[in-house]
Image (tube, rainbow over all chains, first blue to last red; front, top):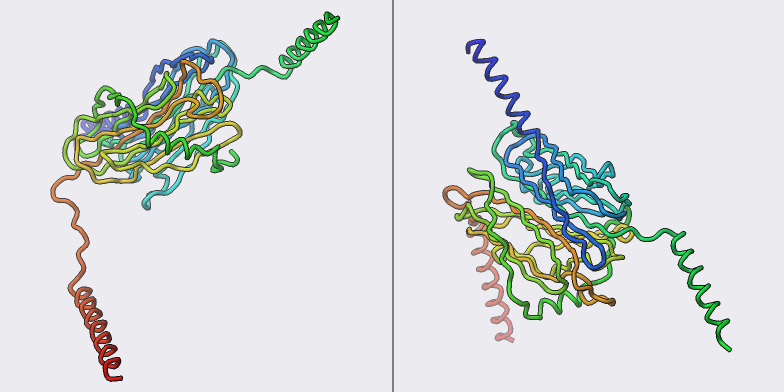
Length: 182
Length: 199
């Protein structure tokens, strides 16, 4: 092979690897708020090229303080046709993972858990998911693998101080009512 | 993460009730084009329920109509302090084959429900049908008019090219052994009967 062709091919391979590793950015509109102020959103991502990826999901800005929990899931029937989650976080709060063998394929079933965590109002919410699609295959090889997930947003529960204030108010009302009785 | 596989409050009776009830009209989501190829395809599906109560939704996948090995997954999560974000799955199937439900994962007030479809041979077109209930689902409390409860899932298809993998056929040796065993059984029966008659 001519040196020029070799250089060209190396560049092409590097470009492919970069493209495969780049991942995608998704704008996911939150559904809600409902009658109780909750919001929710499903997460979906497919990978048809093998390689490392970093996907980002932007959910917009949180209108009020909230507790947010979430889930991720993927399943593959062979190492070459599945997603291996490496890490995921919502604005830096990490998800934990459990991975189990299915039909002899290690880490075929992967689940991600975001436990309820507080987020301040005005925060732009960004979920970042990094992983490997099609383990053992050359970057850019055609595969079919995907993952899903959900984000559940509930308005922040009032702090103990708020409750104390409420109780004090109620007590005052009760006291006034008692005094008014003849 | 602690207590990950503890059981959440039982939803068994409700799941049964909703399975027995005749659900209303099935909502068909827009067809989902499978991505990838030539041999491996993938697709995702999801829904956010904004009205409480029973639901049945169909997700049809286009782009591959032949035989394929199909597998999939499904997830939802909610905070048990706010049951209006809850999804209870009563039946999840791909072309009639049910997904396998895992025990609820629990951490504090958080609950995760997940299901998997192990490799299943099916003829396309492929369709996932999800039925269940969203919101309080029979739990005590005032059901609001609107809710937000999401679920999301994946489907992978490995196209079957050429003839199907052969079904295991017993070797001639094993067949001969089975015949010999049958013969021995028949013989011992005969001998037993003969001995009884002689007595």
